[in-house]
Image (cartoon, rainbow, N blue to C red):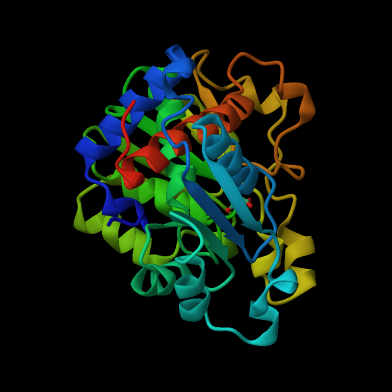
Length: 304
Ligand code: NCD
């Protein structure tokens, strides 16, 4: 029984395999429409979500399986004070696999240690979000045809953005990767992630200047300022519009740039950019459902 708590739980070879399965699902969706018949996915979401929860659920339905869902902490026994461990043991009696999102860092790991079925971390606080990373890697690989030899810019809330932390950890394992960290001083990448970059000898730079960094980027990963992780509203209001990507700012970019964003978008990307062929964020949403289908199959050990 395997769980996915952080992206390093998968080897690069396993990630390649998931990407290959995802590409095959896109090419031959019918082949996969019954593979999870009789299986149940429980989505336990103790934090808001649209895409991640619905994409897990859509993924399971498209594999022919069924879904049980808790969509808010307030509507579950967590509100009565039940521990994550007890919730995990309970849900193991009802379902075959769990996808859990939780505001506390480490909660899905605790669930995995107590469940008798695989647990997928669907986002734990400001820490990790490995299935968004699989989504991002599938998108980069489909857009660029490779995961090596790329200059990837991360812009916005690099401190609290869990998708950033997970994607950087994943990219460290490929060759020829250069990371450009673009953020205000207060929202810089946490030192534990920077230490990892240094330990692995990955080339990276830090700047506050998005337009200055633009010309060298192959991928630009925009992020939302994570309001729910701030200790006070004033800081959020001061920082929320630090970066707004506009057609004007894109003038300095490569014509083959790929613009990613895990979504939800607040203000960071002008709607005028949505029709630019470089905008990939809605393709990313589609890819997220597909790669979660591949992941559910892998963890349930079912094959087409
Ligand atoms: C992200 C998340 O929840 O961390 N959203 C998502 O899962 N696609 C990014 C965010 O909320 O800003």
